[in-house]
Length: 543
Image 1 (tube, rainbow, N blue to C red):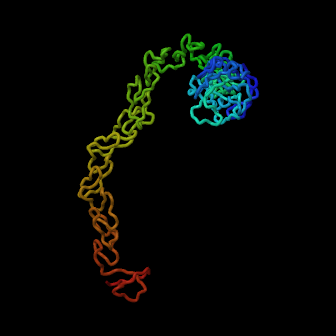
Image 2 (image 1 turned 180 degrees about the horizontal axis):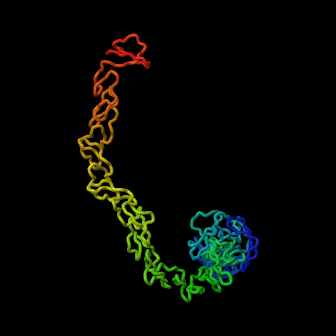
Image 3 (image 1 turned 90 degrees about the horizontal axis):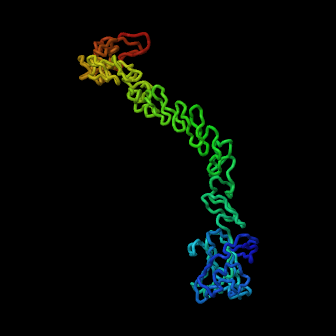
């Protein structure tokens, strides 16, 4: 049954006021139940029989409960399955009298509630409407209640359990429902004409008004309502996947991308996105699994002939199925398929050769063992496997050994001498000459120090530094005379004579005569026995 016009248009919250609607009455002639029944012709089913032209309680068209002291009362209809409900229409009994504050039935209608549930227990469902504000003068009849929920049972409930009650309320709970109409659609429909929802992702219900899908579309479908199939050679979720190479350019299946008549030549797979391998003689592969009917081209192997053979010994082809080499690998390679280079500083056939001492610990070439950046110090050769000889050491054996004791060869890496240095030499490599130790003593062969002191004319830790000006003798411990010119660092003799007025080997004695330049002085005194001047004239002065 379809209702065309609503009987009453109401402006209160939670009430519906459309001018025209075409939702189906889902409650018509469905099983109904109520908590109590007044008489045999007032059973619960009377409220869903589609008749309400006689609104007298006992006219045979209304469901009426027993009114003897009931504190709660309940009526429900079973819609036969979960439905998408839009609104509920209720026609209460009027006793065929004017519906106003003087109508006694208003007091029994006040305070009612409507629930939607998937079970017969209202507490398992949702509350659509509860009257908390109507009075006997304002409560509408009939009433339309907006109720956009999914459920199987629509439950009408009223109670008188907590006196005192608001003004105008009856003292007992009472049902007098002449008709209850539940308008909506089956689940997975929308709109007033109950159109079927599209293919919403996860099979969820679309919006009951607009038909839009809350979480997008199933694979292969697009559009706000998820009612359009993928096109333009696309498929899958949100039509984001591109079709493969279907035979003759046909579009693929919009959901899974499969090709209805197989793949183009050279392609295979469910979606024809895989390229055939290197089949023997250029034959096409199988369109489903990519296998080659007569094996692989030389140098290839595997089910689809896409794998390249490794480096088999003597250039032999590998096994066409598993890629193994029948007679082993070429030098520098290992593994069943000869596709792995030697590692762990090995090289050669079966990786049995050990690399030499390549520079900075680098691995050698996996085939011939050569070192890419030369050798470590102390070794040479293209494989860096020979120690330095001929009294050489260091990088590329370019360094010459020093003067090792008894002519022994030095260490090939750092040039150190195993048994120390020859006499007169010192240092790690015995390349440093001893200084001039006193009494001809030999210096320490490690640091070059002299055991007792330095010879005359030298000083320093290794006795190899000449005395500084003004010093002479053993370890330069003696001071030259103050009046000496050109003091010899070995014996202190004044090689260039003495300052004027001094004489002796070390210029340590006063001279009786001295030449002094003439200064414009008229006399000499004890404090100034002579005058120094730059004039070319001079006098001989007696001291």
